[in-house]
Image 1: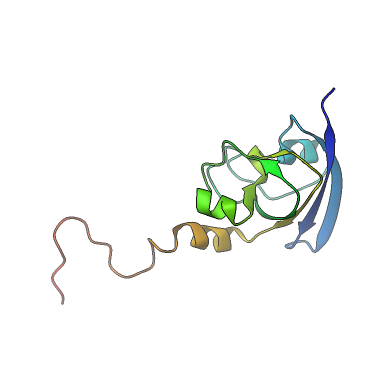
Image 2 (image 1 turned 60 degrees about the vertical axis):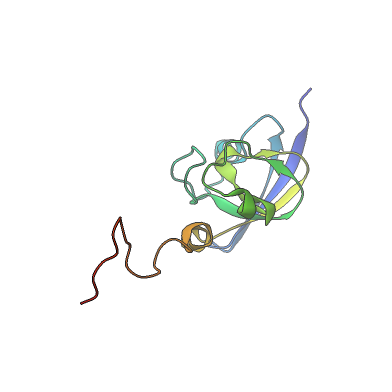
Length: 122
């Protein structure tokens, strides 16, 4: 028998809280949707940050979370589309742009992008 865990989702964008039982062998997002809980998502492949949450309490397993660096995962970020509960959880939805900036901000928006030879200054 597969254990189930209570997952509480604090949806910051909708100012709503959801609580759902999720089996340990099911993706959190997919199973929540089957229970008529509408959460943000986009790719469903673990490659973007639309379904990103911050884990406030508990443990989950997200082996396919390509859209989050190991550093962000260690800081408690997760992608619900590819996460399995490993205990009762409390998670909070995040702003996609905020997580994207944490992930990639050090690479983008820092001035001119230079490919090959340096650009001549105007």
